[in-house]
Length: 135
Image 1 (tube, rainbow, N blue to C red):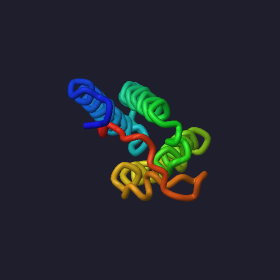
Image 2 (image 1 turned 135 degrees about the vertical axis):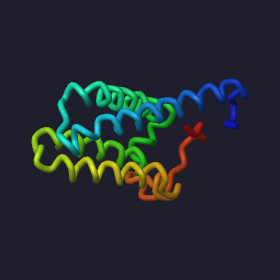
Image 3 (image 1 turned 180 degrees about the vertical axis):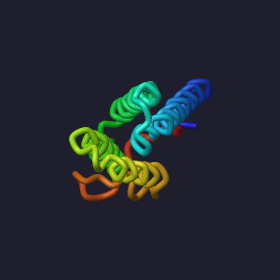
Image 4 (image 1 turned 60 degrees about the vertical axis):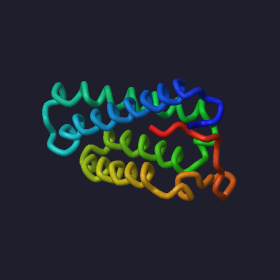
């Protein structure tokens, strides 16, 4: 349990973050048909909205918890993923490759070693922020 949180607060935060992550992944899965198979926009747009809104909430959660997130690789890679997805609009011919790179980066960011995720591009070393509630 994280320092300074009651057991109830810890579980509320943990379940909230896990729920947001699950909805984010579900949204990405639902929207992937638009990237990979060019299905009709009305079929994937609600999933995309869910993915982007939950992703935004998760990013804000991390920045509020620790502004260091912005210079740690986990934050830098997340912002890079947002940029790569944005490039799908001006370069639709590359959307499958870009979306695939984003998916691979997501796994590396989420499941990579702490030394990678917590490496600060600003400080040029691992910087651990405050203890986080895993989701």
